[in-house]
Each structure stands twice: as C-alpha cells, then as structure tokens.
Amino acid sequence: MPPSSPPSSASAPASHHLRLWLRRRGRAGAAGATFAVALLAAALLLTLSYYASAPLASHDSSATGRSPALVGLTLVRRAQEKGALCLDGSAPGYHLQRGSGTGSQSWLIHLEGGGWCRNLKSCASRQRSILGSSRYMERQVEFTGILHDDKSQNPDFYNWNKVKIRYCDGASFSGNVKDELQNGTRFFFRGQRIWEAVMNELVFKGLRNAKQAFLTGCSAGGLATYIHCDAFRALLPKDSRVKCLADGAFFLNVEDISGKRTMQSFYSDVVRLQGLRERFSHCNSNMEPGKCFFPREFVKHIANPVFILNPAYDAWQVQHALAPEASDPQHSWLDCRLDIAKCSSEQLEILQGFRKELHDAIREVKQKRDWGFYINSCFVHCQSLNSFTWHSPTSPRVNNKSIAEAVGDWFFDRREVKEIDCEYPCNPTCHNLVFAKPFKI
Image (cartoon, rainbow, N blue to C red):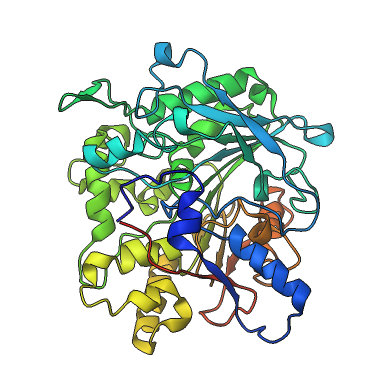
C-alpha cells in the first residue's frame, strides 16, 4: 500500500531513501566516459518520489536541448469562499506557462500524482507536506517532458499553453465532503471542488477558446484523468480537438503474492473516507467500494478518447500491489522488488502473469477505435514528465517510436497507435529502475 508519512522536504526522499540507479539493459560495455556521465545524470532524472506514485523526478540536466523553464505557482483565488481547499484548508495551486505562436490556442493540462491517504492518520501526515498543503509547495517548478518548451524534447506540444495542477486532496481530485471535522480535527476532502475551481480559472484565462486541449496526468493524477476526462471535454468548444492521457495509472485489482487484494482493500478505505461511492455513477450498492476506484471500471464509461501509457511491469505496482512487504514476511521478493534483473525464474513467471492481467484489463480499450495505448516492457513508473524517457535520442522505444512520437501520432490522428511491447527482457531500450531499498510504507 502507498506510504503514509511525508518526506521532510521535496528533495530528501530522492536522495536519502531511494537513490535509484539506471540500468540500460543489453548495451553493457559500449559506453565511454561521456556516455557514463549522461547515464549518471539520467539516473538522477529517473529518481522516484518518496510517495512512489509521483512521476519520475523532474530534474532535467541530461536531455538534449536547453534547460527546462521554471514556472511560478498560482494559488486559486477566493478558495475559501469556493470551498476548494487542500487537506489542511490552504488554497490549492497550479503552474501556468503561456503558449506562443501556433500553440497560443492549444492547452495541455497535467494533473500531478502522489498516492492517496486511506485514513485520518495518513491524511494528517499529508497536511504537513506538499501533498496536502500549498504552504509547503515549491514556488517554482521545472516543466520537463510533456511540459517542456523545447521543441527538440517535446516536438508536438512545446509551444502550447501548459498547466501543472498541484495535488493536495489525497483522493485523485475526487472528494467533496462538506463536513470539516473528523474526530475533532479539521480535514478538507475537497478534490472535486479543487478541480472545478482550477478549471474555472483556466477557462477564464483562455481555455474556453482552445482549438486543441489535452488533459494528462501521472499515477494518482492519471487516475484523476480517467475520472475527469469527459467533464474536461464538456468545458471546451464542440469543434475543438480534446483528448486525454493517463500515465502510469492503470492500477490493477490483482491478488498479491499471498492471495490478498491489497489495492482493493486500500482503495476501499479511500472511497469510504472521502465518500466517493455516491460520486461515481458506476459504483452501485452491489459493488465492493474499492472496486469502484480502479481504472478498469472507469474506462467502461468514458466517451472521450484516452491514451493509456503504462509499463507492463510498473515498479510502483510491483512493490505495492503485487508484492507488498506485508505479503512477503520471508523477504523472498526483496531483491526482485528492488531490481527486476534479480528476479528468479519463478518470480518472473508471476510478473509475466501480472503483464497478462494488464493486457486482459485493457481488452475493451483495444476495441475502441479512437483510443490508444503504449505498453512497454520496462520496470519503471511514470514516463511522460521526464525528458529522458519522454523524448531523447536514448528514450525507450516500441516499434522504433519514442513515447512522445507515439502520443503525438495518436493525438493528431497521424496513425492508429496501439503498441504492446514483447515480454521482459526483450526490449534493450528500456531504462529499468534499480532501488537501493524498497519504498517506505
């Protein structure tokens, strides 16, 4: 299950708890000193956040082209009046970079990820972090990957209006609990109101005139993309091109290695805590509450086109859904959870079964003509917010297409994109994460 305690700072988790190393499989021995330096920088780029469900770390010194822009934080106006508040009652925020030239009437919105809180204790911890309070949020963030303004690193969306919406409600921008007091402590479960308040401000700032718009999100933010995709479409002119992308967010309702459904149990707590059963029309009384929160249920009811970007061996899901620490008291999966290259043949067989579960779960998507997907065979998590994995000379590829190229082809209808990679370890272009220690729980 996702971690429940916040880091002491935004950068501390990356440097002190995870220290991930990049391994480029199948190309050992071919690198010189220059390439080694690039790999070291890339390793820093590929560091996951403490919460493990946030995107790969955004520091972007290794990609080709110029450095990413620093974009300032804007707090929602009259947030208290609107009831659109972070967990601690502070105003939510977003970062807006204006587009230019041919992109001045195109908008790309990115919903930040960062796990969920399942109980008052874990939500209280978030109240003292960037995932529950704008008081702790960075005043400027780098725009990298799909948010980058360098054409060489982001060929199709570089000059668009781009927005990163900060995540501070603990339930994928979906809760709307009126009561503030929980066991005598004030909590604001207002993700839905945050979504509406930010969208209203962006509509006023030009989104209403968009010719093209793209709603994207990573991990918990990708789940929010599934939740809000059709509502986003409804905000835009009928003749505009509007699509959505969910990155590293197709969470699976699978049994873990001990036979328990850890993620379903976790999601049940989130749904109950924030009163989400009534929020989702597909969540009927006969359905177990946690099941309502899985993407497989949401995609059945989404009308607008969506692109699913996911690794077949999602590092976050392997560590928290398939082989959580509680399911492995003998620590027989410890090495495999840290490094897919250290998995035994029996463990790899289970991982291939996990891959098959993903393929089965997206079966309905395969039949949707205007949907797309890109499932690579990498051991990684979110890939769209990092210029190294998004689009660079050494990016992961499927059928010789980088993620950015595949997404651009799909968004602009240049071709149908329904890419499924071969089984691990077949793809030498993967950048598989290697962990120094597991994610903290």
